[in-house]
Amino acid sequence: MHSVSVNLEAAQYLAGWRPEAGSLFLPALSESRVGDPVAVRVGIYGQTIRATLFGKVALVRRIGRPALPPGVELNLDRGSVAAAGFLAMAARGEPVSFRERAPRYAAERRLVVEHAGTSFESATLNVSEGGCSLRWAGQLPLVGDLLGLKLGTGIFAPVARAVVCWNQPGGAVERSAGVRIISDGRAGRAWRSLVADVARSGARAA
Image (cartoon, rainbow, N blue to C red):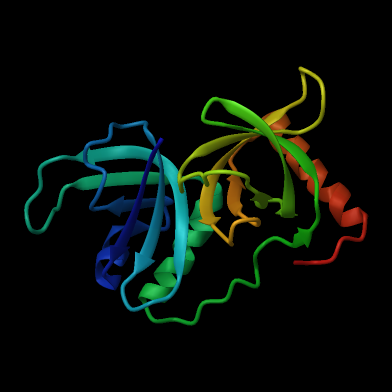
């Protein structure tokens, strides 16, 4: 997994954004290879909006020229296409609203987190179909790190893959990280079921 943070000029971002294909060219990560997973934190100069996009490298240009800089083209995952669209709106100077995001619920659910070869128990601060924020003890993960969230008990419990989108020191006691679920199949269904259970419990919207 490659992770990077980039700030782009509005015209530069719009020139690389292909909404019909769900792809984005970035003048970065030219050392990566086709097929590599990438998490990138993108900002637009002059705008406060930032977003973490996740995808796979579809094209690598290692040597460029002024009109065609070196970089990579990413095929964005489904959850990142909308965020890339919000960035495009900001780059065009259009008003941006996040009110269309999936409902998010304030809820504590105990989960086993797998990260960097270790496992530990943590708890969610809030959950949505797209992901959650987690309490985090010790050194915070980096944006772009991959996690596993074990959903249930027993050796056959599904493990949802997730990517870190942000981290927040928050002081010596309360540390947290925001993650986005990138699993499909059984693990993806198990996560959506967990969120549905939280919604039915009457948890307040966050």
